[in-house]
Length: 216
Image (cartoon, rainbow, N blue to C red; front, top):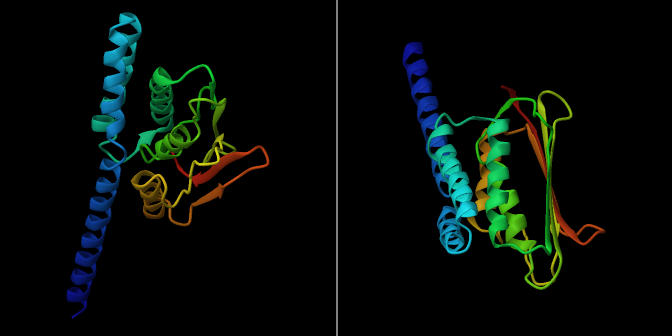
């Protein structure tokens, strides 16, 4: 009887793991694919006025797509890869921004290599660009990444808060941020904290994430 129970438990655990992996794959696949199409449109417009910048932008976009499609297939990425991905994202987003938007990205140079779930940081950065930029007013986006200890990662993302902009982490940005919270629950259960401040004294929306991570 005991071997049968062990077999059933093993099969149940395997099925649970398969469900988790399938859900993670689905969540990862749903992270805002329209960004790539919008960026291609921006690059096309840029080719008409500045071919050199357009070629550089296309190179960045192809590097991002390679990261998303191939480099993250194992379900893990080096932190340096994630930092490069975020930097490329910021640079491409700036193609359509004016000099009234100030974007700051601070991180250790070089970073201490650790393994992290790929594209875990993107929805927070994406949310800041979506809600923290106005066409007629000065805007500020701050992205900070710190490593207080070898196994700890802290991310701080802040953006200017505008009266009509809803930046509710649970729902306003739809699938991206909701999926990120779910991915955190699945991958870092009991090993992360997420703090959302709807309005700071400096009139900013702020997200702080702390994760206990594995070494690289």
